[in-house]
Image (cartoon, rainbow, N blue to C red; front, top):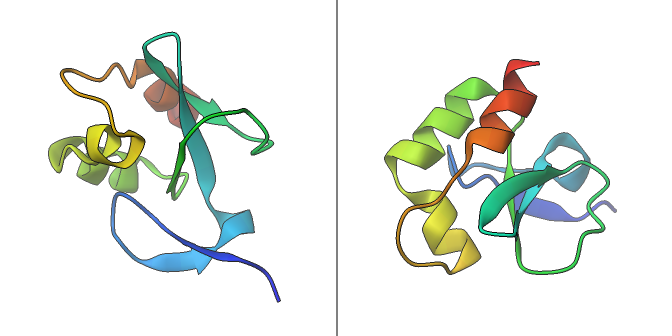
Length: 81
C-alpha cells in the first residue's frame, strides 16, 4: 500500500507518487522531484491551480514552518515547464 499525503493547495489526499514534494533550500522553496532532499517537506499536486491555491492560502510558510515572505518562484517555474 502506497503512502498517502495531503496537498497543501487543494487539501485533498492523494498517493505520494502523484504529488510533488517541495522543501526550503537557501531561503527559497524548491521542487524535490525525487523526494530525497533533507529537511521538512510539503506536498503539492503538480498543477498551477494547486500552486496558486497554496500561495493564496499562504500554505508554503505554514507547512514548511517559516516566517515572513516565501520565495516560491522556483516551484512556479517548474510547473510552467
